[in-house]
Image (cartoon, rainbow, N blue to C red; front, side):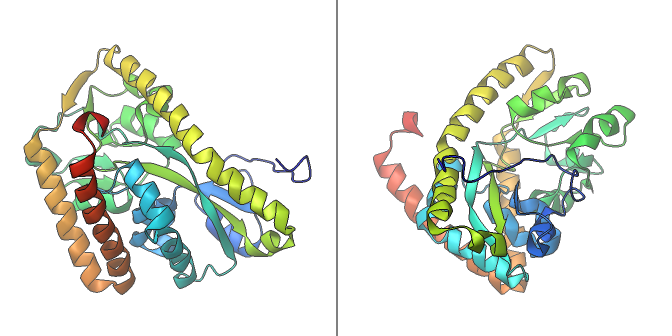
Length: 299
């Protein structure tokens, strides 16, 4: 789109700065830009970051995108960065959208709430906090350590990403059960943030090209992810793992535990409460409209 005027070089996690420190590196100028799910920076910006990457019983992908684009989500995201002191980070948008993640890969079936008691479950973010409330022992691990940790029994269960990506990680080799649906994370996506000094060095036409390139990548990336996940789910089903669908009772209990946790957190954190109210108000109106207009087959 830039006719060669803008050159971007990609690096894998950990190549230039330690993994999960990319946001700080962009703030300091050690990186020009970064791409990641916002929730991995919960330690730096607060648990509120989960509103932009999926949380238990939260919005689906279409709902999240529309709330972000026209419901105040984009402005609240930039406000979150400012509140946490990241005033030298320019938020250029989100891309790499996906639908729900796999709920769990495990060596123990989760058929009722008692199954969470003492379960060594690799997770994090808001779902990790809700899991702890349900009695699980939450273990924080980067993606590359999941396979050996499960193989050695360091963890009993884990969630990572969506079916297509999870299958390529070889998880069918180390688990006995695949469990869904992904009530813990009905959607996810990744942000694109740029060092503000670097951003302001770009002429206005290149700034607009970057913004529109991020925006233009959103739906094609989602379509590609959906295709990979459809194919991945078929491969998981053919792998011999036992497929368990969470009961309505377990899903409802997770919804109630999530709501209770969010209400408690909102009472202690005014900005969390502000974002929660924004999203709840939007979802109430949006879902009411959809219920009347959109037939079930099209949801």
